Image 1 (cartoon, rainbow, N blue to C red):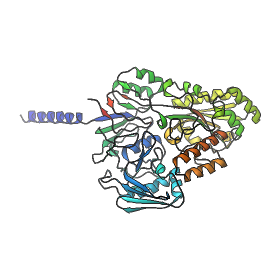
Image 2: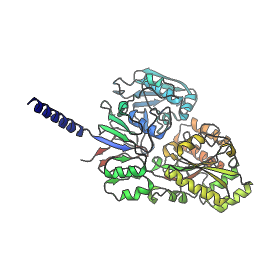
Image 3: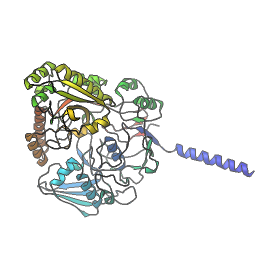
Image 4: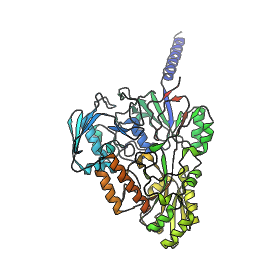
Length: 525
């Protein structure tokens, strides 16, 4: 009788546990790369950026129209001379350990971010003092004009200026923080993390969303799932199969070859993202070594950039890319413009051949990276190689994976010593929307990004852009920067496109802004 009672109790406990587990609302997602680094200040990795938006929060955030809105802040005030900014936190903000968010925490977090991030460093060069006034207010006083204070602390992409407790913000910014404590809508379950397998995030019950609706990456971050699981499925075909079988709810990047198939599946939804939420295919040229140290050779290369051909090679449907976008700062974005694009509108291999001859090109080898493990970069690489050869370049292909390219691209030596000439890649629109974060513009005359372009006029224009606070005048300067970038052949633009997620059709109100965010979404009952 006692045995029967024990068996019955065990059965009831198991039944209760199963029932309780079934009440936990779980969202299962697959990101495009493996989560390795958990500190968004220590790395610019996009997957860590995704992690940051789940676990941490920001003072200012960008809406779907590209405008900056208060997020953790209740308000900010700017002095008439634009030299002093006073910030006030929203009441009731808490860290995941239950302690209150303070102005001192925010000051420490901004200083750590500013020691690492390019735009942040520029802001602090112009800063006289940043200090807490009381528990929920702090002030930034400039020493010299810097018109992008709000743009900087609201920067949407890597390095995202996230807030963390002051004790963690004291960590050397080149090293990872010893623990993950944020104030964002999700809590990272570090104990259950198995790299290469699963990462778990739990709803932060003490999170206080803003009252306004979610818009872009701003507004009310209302979490409607109890548990978020990030699953590791490196193979794209496996991701698609798992999505269609309902084993996962969301995959971050829909493989181009599967888009039409998934569009025909009523159980799957594929959005079409636009503006800064899109990507830009590009070919970064090495200005430091032959043959692209010759400006006229770079001009010849620009004539190879037939975006229709590049985009067709990706396998994306026609409604997911633009036939031509020559704006350095993305099309359908706040700083979009057409300055300096006249010579690029009708690219021609014949023109490229003629310019190569005029440049005195002597058949020097041009080493082109081919990242074979990233489908769209590989497609762009193949078109680049083919069109360069048609134009008369002596092309040497270095085929490898993107991780290897990311390391080898820092080699500034000649091609005989392991250097390179052209690097096909893809950039996030959020990084290209501002000259001070644009990889082909912001690092002019610095060693901050491979390619090593250096132009005196660009340096002068960047300094003007930094000082200017008037939006209309900044657009004018951005147009001048774009014209100059095209004139010196900073980078070849292969085309603007959407590389959207795919998710189960029973998920409603999913926010699709070009980077994964998992608040607001809920499952249709």
